[in-house]
Image (cartoon, rainbow over all chains, first blue to last red; front, side, top):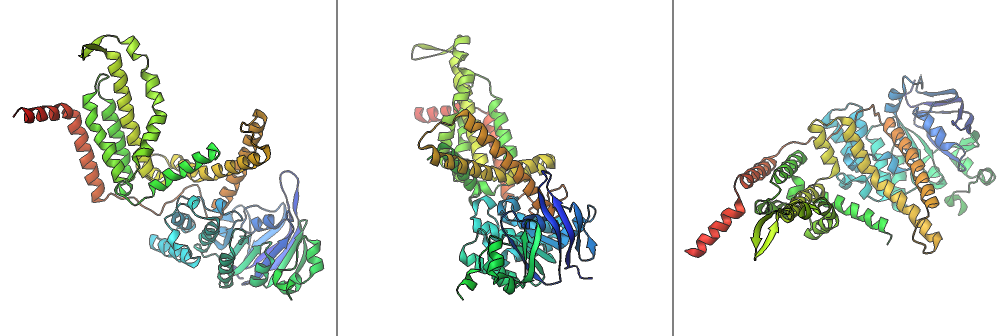
Amino acid sequence: MSHHLVEFRDVYYSYPDGTLALDGVSFRVLHGESVGIVGANGAGKSTLLLHINGTITPSKGSVTIGDVQINAKNKQDIRKKVGVVFQNPDDQLFMSTVFEDVAFGPLNLGFSKDKIMDVTTGALSQVGCLELKDRAPHHISNGQKSRVAIATVLAMSPDILVMDEPAANLDPKSRRFLINLLRNFYHTKIIASHDLDLILDVCQRCIVIKKGKIAADKPAMELLSDSKLLEENNLELPLTLQRR
Amino acid sequence: MISFEKEYFNLGFIDKLAYKDCFMQSIDPRVKIITTAAFTIVVVSYSKYELTGLMPFFLFPMVCSSLGDVPIKYILKKLIFFSIFPLLIGIFNPLIDTKPVFFFMNTSVSGGWISLISIFLKFQLTFSFAVIFIATTPLPQVCAALKRLGVPDIFTSQLMFLYRYIFVLAEETMKMLRARGLRTFGEASISMRDFINMAAVLFIKTCERAERIYRAMLSRGFSNTIHSIKDISLKSADLLYLAITTGLLIFFRLYDVAALSGKAITRGFLR
């Protein structure tokens, strides 16, 4: 079976304060698919993403990556396959220099020193931030932080790329750069965002989450053209479709 | 500008100095830690009435600040600000130690005054050298050096995170103070109730962020040890710096250079 497959089976998750964040979510993402996760604020998108690499485990139901159901014992192995880019780059960049931050994952994967240098340099070049390699993360702009955060994950060559609001801090040019970068990433992608134009550009399929449940799961173009459905979920037609 | 913001940018200034491309910044941090410690021990080892013997040691901060491109004005500002501490330590010396030690222009000078000046000089020397060390060594390098010198991983990791996130915490505080400032219409002082509320919110934000950072670390395969790709190694320039510094420290400690040079100058005049 493919390592790039993601399957949620009737997943429920409640936070310790009793908030039900996921309420029976089931879907299957196939090898190489790009899936956009959209929904109103607090709908459960981020909680859903945190399940994909076992950061949090379901209260009920199961999450399967490839042919392995995530549990406490195999979390570490799952994290080698699933790369997660978090919403706030300040949470993702915790080392003292950009280079060391990008090398953090490969070092933990036990790569050789030469390979670490190669993949780190490669990932930084891919996001156009190689010249920042010796800078401290707190001395670079928010847009640069976002790009470096993406490099930290690309350096680990994940089979599945998961991103939470990847374009939130980016200027239009950097955002376009990111879209092109994601288009060239041929493995499985799961992207949660309010930037529906980005979802339309990058994803073939789109899932709408509403109050912890799947409200719709359709091809991106079909779903993002449905103004009634989008409105029910505090969303709007993507700008590119509004002009038509 | 709110004084907190000034302090934040001041912190950023020291950090930027440490990343400059100068000789002092390029020296191995372990060598700098050892020489700074040796300098402090040698200066403090002088007797409480020593004045002239301390003078040659001013050569160290002067040369090192210029080699590290650390502005003298910056060091002087810090020295003036913190000078209150040695003065507080020695302020009662002139009252306790009234024994005259020597006469200057027909006025007797008591041992207490000499020891107060000596404490003050020792502070100026050690503090300015420590400021130069901090301003020319990025904290991650200090952590790496401490780790190599045998300090446990848990302490160096904590120090590194403190350094990384002190900027984020400062930014959060700055944003909160700005938001408060915009809605208090010029009222500068913060009431105790507001202060407690803001501190509580900051604490909760910090805890939440710590949790998110830990998640991000776990996602990238963290298993309780922070590995580092950069290995620090001694270069010939480091050994040269170490040799010159220790050589001069020993020479200055063994010989009263000020007295010797005084004698040499007087001899020159007499010829």
